[in-house]
Length: 414
Image 1 (cartoon, rainbow, N blue to C red):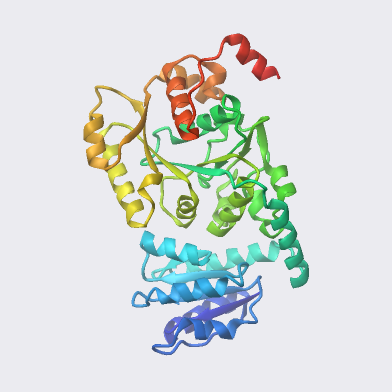
Image 2 (cartoon, rainbow, N blue to C red):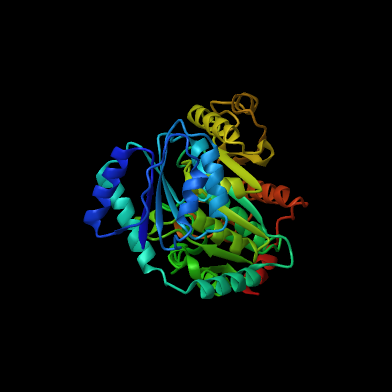
């Protein structure tokens, strides 16, 4: 593995080299960019770069968007190359542009030498653990995998859930809607927990019984195919599969936005709907999913702090170019006499309320504590009715009537 360096700052170039050499990593190309020199002309000199190589690229604030367009064009023929961008601009807009161009990680210009060394060491260990195949073999495998993953039908619908603040029930709602679509509306669904640092949504469907997680896929991303995916999915029901978040924090830290895109594309090729539970933070990974999503549910409560956070979140998403028609507001734990009325909430956030979910803890608590879907413990209640209506609206169909106990029993034992 070689680490190629590309910057217009001679001092920064010397600093990078002083960080890399003690790590025992091998330096590759390191040209100094001249004032006014296009990035594409420098990238042309890296035609020999291999998929296991790293490119550490400086992105000064005064650099035009042309750099990212040049990088995007160059990486289209080198999708496996790993690019780390060190930028003075840490805005969500830059993160989104870099992610679309194929950048694996964006580092702030204030990154300390110690943090940069840790990041480079982490990537080196990850790349060293990947199997090294000959280019021809890798190309053959990639084409075979693509052929296997290519469905005869369009890819499944991607539905993302994001809470405007923590603890407002986003994971519970997303998990139970996936379960309803699969068991009551007979759609083949996958539930993907992408809260990589503290994801526990899988507990709401499987009581934590799943053995494999998404990190088992991404650490073998070059070998990703339908068989590997199947080995990591947990079958909650015959029509619902679960892809859980990593069990430990360290396994989630090395997962990139590009890894997630490859995994989701494969999951979508095998399911009608893919429900993704996202963390509330906007980062390269969540921005990638939001960009791919067909529908984005923003979960909040009709409380003043939620309204402020939802207002900020929606504003940020729209400023990043996210289509407003994707966004749907879900008001969870809704209280008719809450601090903020629905008209006030809609006016402040700038979006209509798609659905309210009533605040009925007596029905929800047993589901939360036992790790079972709500329909398995309390099928007849206003929370389930609201979730059925929301799921039916997503599928553009008429909600089913509440099932008789004998129908539910036969469905669970079938």
